[in-house]
Amino acid sequence: MSPASKLATFAFVSLIGASLSAQAADYPKQIQMATQSGAKVVKTFAAASQLKGWVLSKGGRYTLVFTTPDNKTLLAGELIDAEGNNLTARYAGRYIPKPDRTALFSKLEQSTHIVEGQRKAPKSVIYALFDPNCPFCHLAWKAFQPYEKVGLQVRWVPVAYLSKTSAGKAAAILEAKNRRAAFRENEEKYNMQRHEGGIAPLAKSSAKTISQLRANNALMQKFGALGTPAIIWKDKQGKIQMKVGLPPMSELPAITGLPEQPENDPALARFR
Image 1 (cartoon, rainbow, N blue to C red):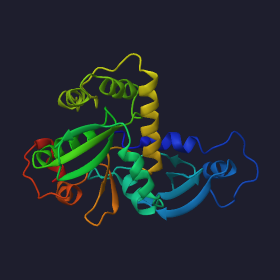
Image 2: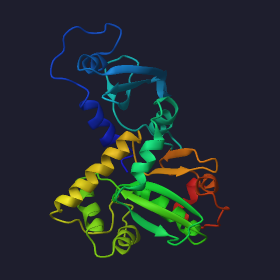
Image 3: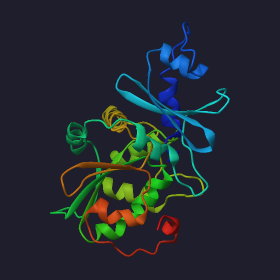
């Protein structure tokens, strides 16, 4: 996961038109450019390190960007604090308006995904949008393993945005004779130093696979997820919930609806 930096940058660039005419005098120039191309400023807020956060919308899509105190520099991507927390994801959850997730959840159920864990009569089902090269997706996969052993089913929904090999690796999983085995190969051979999934990318994907990945990417955007993993589930009240990024291990019982499971993987130590 570049937790959202490439996705957010692309989303912001798409807001800016080629020309700039009448400008909103109170906005930094970069925000003026976005508004002149049809974007709207939904909200501003004080962010970390004296930055100013901006929630922009255009065509039903929201983008979160930041400007420096002198208004000369704009940041489109993730902010990570000294403890490793993804502040961009946190701000997105707090300030970006929530979409109607009921209709979106139905589309999520029909999405192209890989099923792991309890296959028949699972005690709990969650969805996780993932990029094959995303390190935090890999850690989420590790974290869910103990819960899968006691009845959890995880439906992994592949997207591709993080790096040039993401689409090829996602395609390799989707076009494998055994998708689940291919997915596990990607995770079991994951390289944390290089942030690369372990499966070899396909050189050429089928038209069907390309269409499936595009649909999943579009679904990710509609949910307002600015990065991966994006974990989506129904709570005990039937309300649709979403968590972007790897949650603390203490939150997994609430997410999975299952009792807390012991885990001692050193890779997850800082998330306990």
